Amino acid sequence: MMRTGIFFLLFLWSVAFVLTGCYGEKSDKENPVRSDLPNIVLIVTDDHGTGDMGCYGNQAVKTPNLDYLASEGVRFNRAHCTSASCSASRSVILTGLYNHATGHYGHAHHFNHFSTFDHVFSLPVLLEDLAGYHTGRIGKYHLAPEQVYHFQEVMQANQRNTVAMADSCIGFIQENRDHPFFLYFCTSDPHRSGAINDQALAPDAFGNVEGGYDGVEETYFTTEDVVVPPYLPESKACREELAQYYQSVARVDYGLGKLFGHLKDAGVWENSVIIYISDNGIAFPGAKTTIYQPGINLPCLVKNAGGTNKGTVTNAMINWADLTPTLLDVAGVLPQAEEKLRERYEPEKENRYTIVNESFHGHSFVPVLENPEIEGWDETYASHTFHEITMYYPMRTVIAGRYKLIWNMAWQLPYPSSTDLWASSTYQVALKSGTGMYAGRSIEDYVCRTKFELYDLENDPWETRNLAGNPAFSEEMEKLKKKLYTFQERTNDPWIVKWEYE
Picture 1: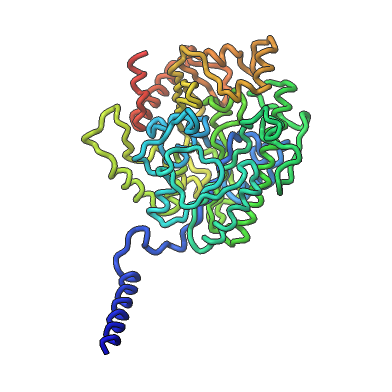
Picture 2: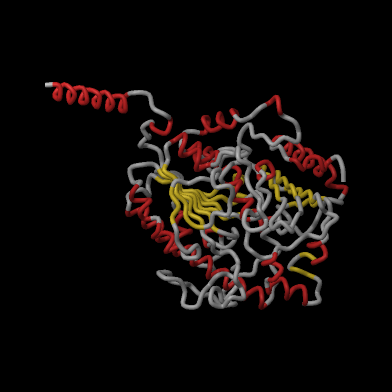
């Protein structure tokens, strides 16, 4: 009888436990997940320029799958990264904060050792904590520390084989068919190879291997196939490297077609927001590591959940600091995320040297996705300090309408080159040609810059005519300087002190 009583009590306890578990108070992470939340797929390629896709007007390079994504969503003509350096740019993408305020001033890997402050919240952490998303990443990471940029699941595959990457994501996608997920999909193509002289790894400068990669149908290009843009020099060396670059771009595109197929097979394509961007511009001198337009004006394709505004184009100006607040807005938790940031903001400790983040630096561009013809989105900013640790050259930029102002804070120094861009045959041939020119500007002007550079992007889209010393533009100069100063105040930029000395 006693035994029966014990079993009965245990039964009552278990019922109470189940009922409490079902109906009692729960933590945020235990709250039922809204089934109407869209999945989010953020694709970030490495060093892909805007002009190097069919949907952006380059019919020489083959990008049918990216062109399809553009037809399924909104194509941005005036999207920008905020720092033309892989690691620094990625920190902005996943925090909504400029890297001058997070401490991620340059590359995270090896001896560079730049890292985001521990108190910063990142997109994957906020999506998991506030909206219950399952988060997963694959491919290039290039960030630190892991606890700030934490993903629940990390898939593995060759980062230059987007087919293998896509296939590695099948399990994650299938397992989350009935649960909102955030997939961060980052290729190492079309970055220059880190093993240019290692024939076993990379016979050419852009990671293309003899015989191709498993499962990839490679597309090959000749020097006659490519289109040399005005910011690059016309030379055999440049054409050879562009042909290799195009092959790398086409490989990315082929694998993305496989990824799109996996999303459709799982039945989640329609209810997914899919964004395609690059971290910075093409890996040639004059683009990557600079904040000239080829370095920061980048591709951005956004497919809305439900397929609204298919095949539309917008000239609204956005930048990568806008991505995190936009995706939190898509998930319906932007106000809660902003509140979490404010909780870590301590006004009594505020001073101009303290890095605090009261809110995101970027803004949600959901209104643009809802109305691509929206007006008023006509201003953006860039902030670059390092690429490699040997490349200190802080620059701040504002683009307002047609005018762009660059402030070169270390203008007394020669402009530094990254190791891979310096070694490129395109640049070496230009240096040894004896002309003293690199495309539309002299090599001297490229290396020895003035304190301020002012360009009229409408009449001079390749930034070859510096108007900073022209008295006719002095009023425009002063207006843009004030905008830069206000931007630095708003985003807690330590380099704001450079207005007062040096």
